[in-house]
Length: 77
Image 1 (tube, rainbow, N blue to C red):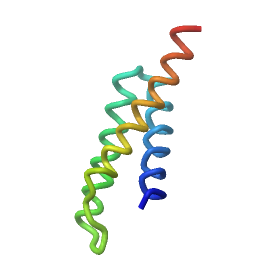
Image 2 (cartoon, rainbow, N blue to C red):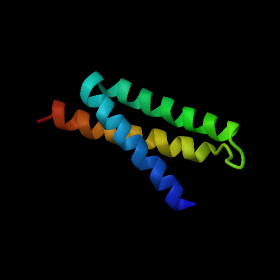
Image 3 (cartoon, one colour):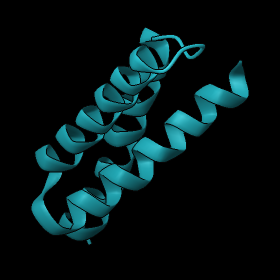
């Protein structure tokens, strides 16, 4: 269970950091949230996968962390 949440966190972190580096902080968080929502929608359409709010939140948290890291490095150097 925790391994799955870690995968969501890392995916969100990578997506958030990459997007933030090009489009800015809010875009990084937003795209990570969109990716998390899309993954949960896919889970809903593909049994036996199930929708898990905490998977979505882990993806968003990763997006926030990744975006903050990139924003911090680029704005406060």
